[in-house]
Image 1 (cartoon, rainbow, N blue to C red):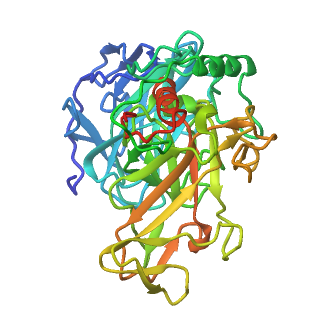
Image 2 (image 1 turned 135 degrees about the vertical axis):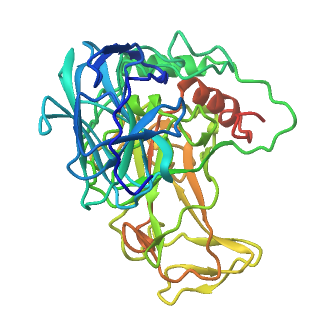
Length: 491
C-alpha cells in the first residue's frame, strides 16, 4: 500500500459476484459518486461506491475480479452508502472484504443512518498478510431494520496509522431449511454434495445459558441416522474407530463466541483454525455459511486455542492441526453425530498451577529422542533436535441429548465412565474430539507463555458446523463400525 494518500476520483460501481453458501441474497441498490443507481442481486456493494466519505482513497485492487478497493483507512475515517436494501425477511448476514498489512489492528463497524447510529455489525481486523491479502469477515446481525437504509462504514483503531483496506460489503438474508440427516435427507448412503442450509432449530443469534435442541427434530434425526446402511468395509482397515480433519491456522483475534458471544475483543487472544469467519458474533448459521481451512471442506466448524508466545512473539502451530474424531467407549457402535451448533470447552483458562485432575501440563515432545529435560520453571519439556513440542487436548464424548451449551460450557457434556460407557446423566455417545497441535519448537522452549497465562491454562474450544451429511457418513461408516478412516472419510 502506498505511503502517501492520493486524490483519485472514484469510478462507477464494478460488481463482483461472490456466492454465499446457503443464503438467498437480497437486491442492494446504491448511489455512486456520479449519481447513477446500480443494482446487484448478490447483495454486494463495492466499497468505492460511496455517497460521501472522510479520509478514504481508492487504488487498483489485487483481489479477485479486479477493479478498485478503498484504502488509507485509519481511526475516525468513514464512508456513507445511500439506498442500501437490507431486505425484509430471514436472518441478515453482513459481510465485509478486508486486507491489512498493519499489525496494530482495529475494528470495521457498519452503522445505520449516521456514524454513531445503530450498529449493524462489527468486525475486528488484524494483520491478514498484506494490503492485498484479502479475507472475508461475516456476522449475523441483530438489527430489526429492513428495507432501504443509509449504511456507514466507520473505522476504529487505538493507533493513528492506516490499518485496513476494504473492497466490498455484502448483505444477505438466509431463510431456515432442513439439512441432510433429517428424516428426508439421511439414510441415503454416502452422497456428498455441497453445503446445505442449517435446520430450523439453529439459533439466529448467539445464545447463552442452556440453549436446547428441538426434541422432535433431534429424535427424528437420531432415528434417521441409525437407519443408515453403513458402507461395506474394504481394504482390511485398521481396527480403530477414527477419522480426522486437517485444519491450518486461519486467524487470530481477542474474541470467543462461546464464552463472550457478541462481545468483540472481550477475550484473551486466540489462535483459530478451521472456519475463517469465526469472531464474537459467530453462530451456527454464520459458521455454516463460512469457508474453512480444513480438509475436508465439509467441516465448517470453528476450533480455537489460546495463542502461544515465545518471548512475546506469536508462535503458530506447525502445518495443519489434526482434529481427530474417534471413540473411547467400550462399544462405539451407538455413537451418533453431535447436532449442528453444539459447542464445548476442554480445559480451564483459570488453571495456573499443576493439578491432579489431568488438566495439568500435557505438553510433550514427539519424535526421535523425545524430551531431554525441562525448562527452568518446569512448565515445558525441552525436546531433542529431532523432536517437536506437542500438545493434545481431548473433549468429553458423552452428551446430555438436550442442550447445545451450558453456562459453564461443560455441564451438558461428560466423559465415559469406568465401565466404558456414557453415564445415565449424559447418555448419548458422540464423537470424541481431540486436537493434536505441534509447534516448531524443540531445543529452546524457554520464554513460552500462553495468552491465558502459563502452560497449565491450556484449553480449547469447539463449535460444531459440519455439513450434517458429511459428518453422519463418517460417524456411521467409520466410528460405528470401529474402523480407521482418513480425512475423506474412506477406509
